Image (cartoon, rainbow, N blue to C red; front, top):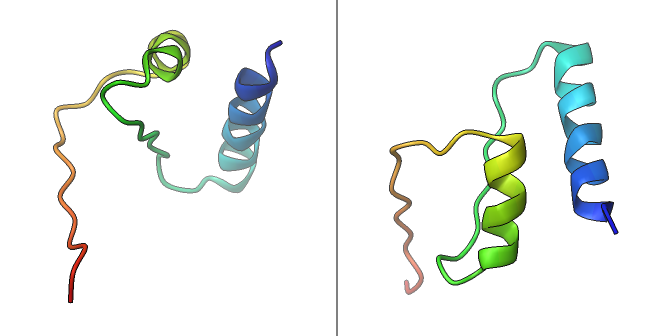
Length: 55
């Protein structure tokens, strides 16, 4: 339907208008649909995300 792409393009427009820092998109490894979209609208980075989930 193009909803995800439209939302991302809206974020890009706001970032460009406000001259804010770069934006990053995160998804789970198994989310292949998101990967397809992100591959078209962004570049893969070499960052690895770490998190703390327990106190």
